[in-house]
Image 1 (cartoon, rainbow, N blue to C red):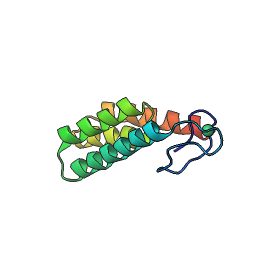
Image 2 (cartoon, protein in one colour; image 1 turned 60 degrees about the vertical axis):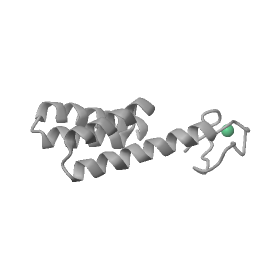
Image 3 (tube, rainbow, N blue to C red; image 1 turned 45 degrees about the vertical axis):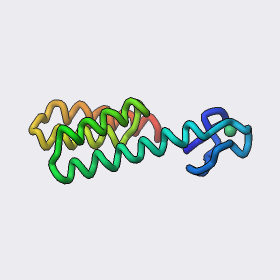
Length: 103
Ligand SMILES: [Zn+2]
């Protein structure tokens, strides 16, 4: 994760930024919850529990709006449901955000 104040990369277990002293505990908790939700989402996807999977990915997006893993997961869920248009729109969102972060 990164410090929200100064953008310095920080250890996931850090409670305070080494550079500016910002409190990272809450962000760490959120990151942890996010990674749990993502792994639950993909586990559900693997066992074809699509509704469950979507639920986990949507919850991930509530924590982090641009969460790439969640958007990718939602695209996969839509594909498995044969909802190609929806899958495509997630896929586009995924690509747009990717190119935004890595110009
Ligand atoms: Zn900082």
